[in-house]
Image 1 (spheres, helix red, strand yellow):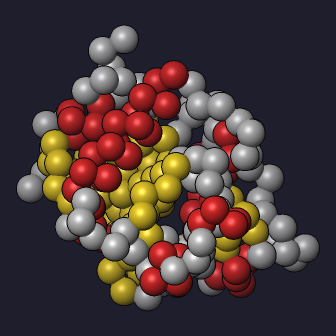
Image 2 (cartoon, rainbow, N blue to C red):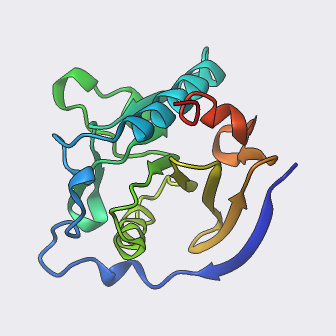
Length: 189
C-alpha cells in the first residue's frame, strides 16, 4: 500500500472551542449557499460516486455539501464537502426533516487555495470533537495530493500523505483506491 506515515501527535484539549459556543469564522466555502469551483466540484462528485459504489449494500450514508454536520461539543454547524456516517443515530433520523449529520466516521474537504491552512486546522479542532470521527481528509483539487488524519486511539491522530502513484486507504471504510481514480475527471479539463 502506498501510504506513508508522516508523524503522530496528540492534539490540544477539545475544550478550546470558542467561548461563545459558535463555530470558527470559516471561509465562504463552509456556508450552506456557497459554491465550489468546477475542479473542486468534479473531485467531490467523483469521490462521492466511488464511495457510494463501495458502500452499496451497507448501512452507510454518503452526504454532500451543503448538508451540515452538527458538532455538539462546540455547539456548531459546519458544512464539509463530503462525509460518511454508518452510525444508527444518523441512519434512523429522517434526513428529510433536518438533513443534519451528527455522527460521521469520515469527513472530507476539497480545499480551496483561497482558504488558509489555519482555517482548516480550526475546522479540524472542531471536527475532532465528534466522538465517532475516525478520519479527516484534505484533498487538493488541482493535483493528486491528499492528507488523511486518522485517529489511532482517543486523542491521538496520525497523518498520512498520498501522492501520485499511491493507493489511498481509508481505514474507516476499508476502502482502497488508486489516487488517480479520484482525480481522473478533475484534471482532464
